[in-house]
Image 1 (cartoon, one colour):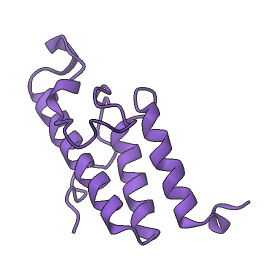
Image 2 (cartoon, helix red, strand yellow):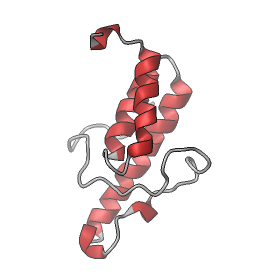
Image 3 (cartoon, helix red, strand yellow):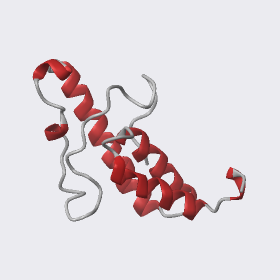
Image 4 (cartoon, one colour):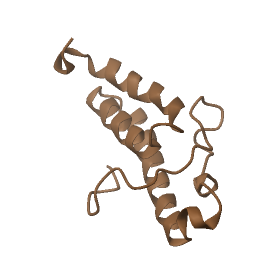
Length: 111
C-alpha cells in the first residue's frame, strides 16, 4: 500500500507503538511524528499529549547540552518529567536524542 492509502489512525497507532523503542529511535522524532499523525486522525487529545511530551524532551535536551551533554556522565533521561508516561508502555527513562529532530527556529509549541 502506498503511504497515501494508509488510514491516518493506522499511521498514528504505528508511530505511537514505535515509542516503545525510543532507546533505538530518537524519541523526539517519534513524538513529533506520532503527535502529527494523531492530529491528522482527528484525535487532538492524543496529539496534544504527545506533542507536549515532545516539548518536555526538547527542553530537557537543551538543558542536557548546556550541562555538558555526554561529558556530564549521564544520558540525560532524568531531566525529562516522566509523570505523563508512568503506567504506560512508553519508556520513561529513554536516553535523550543526540540532537534535535526539528531544525533550529522550528516551532516547539503547539496549539
